[in-house]
Length: 338
Image (cartoon, one colour):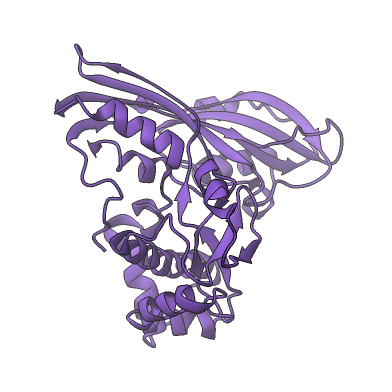
């Protein structure tokens, strides 16, 4: 799918991740492990390592099943990232330093907690990004950054959700078209891929219509940082201010058996978009997924940047909630090559 730009295509090009240190991610749990309990929690810094691969090495060190290793989310491989892992308390002494001998990873913090770390537990991620070799007209870049810091960027599901060359999307379409069902461990990922494609299609339509930041009749508005939503009421004079401040957001469907969950014009728009993707929508309903909503925009919090026009380098940092992608924000700022 060719995704539109909310602010028009960027006038500046550059290279992101010319080295792993140019893409730094720090996972923010939003709480502290309590220091006791039957699970070991490890804060791990890794460089160009896949999250699942590090989890596998930890399971081998601790002598437990890979299924027993918990982590909250998958982190970019071509980057330097810190994230938490949990394991059942090992029954034997473990040389944790061995992790660094098997992977490009090191344990920064070791503590305990009463529960396993579950997917989606973390509150967000802090990013520190460097774009090098800037080309094009830099004169409008600061204004563009200021606009995004205030009003946000489209909350796309980024390319990594769809697999290499869109392979996950091809696989779920084949499955829903009557092909052999994937292994159970792969089904959840493919179902998420299908929902992501449908959400992106809805967001693309709203950007093209100029309504992605303007509530439609029957809009399902989401409170910032919450999964719940409410239907916008006509004549709510405070709504525009709440949208401008980032207190609430317009939203799009994460398709499931309940359908759109929006009402009025908003529901009609979503149903029209979904009708063009009937194979994916019907497959999700058939598999029994519960419908949900996702904000159409994400506002990078604590956003700061430094533009070195002489050396043609942009450095910026910001915080995103769990489930939002830094690369989705960056595509609105700079056309990047990785």
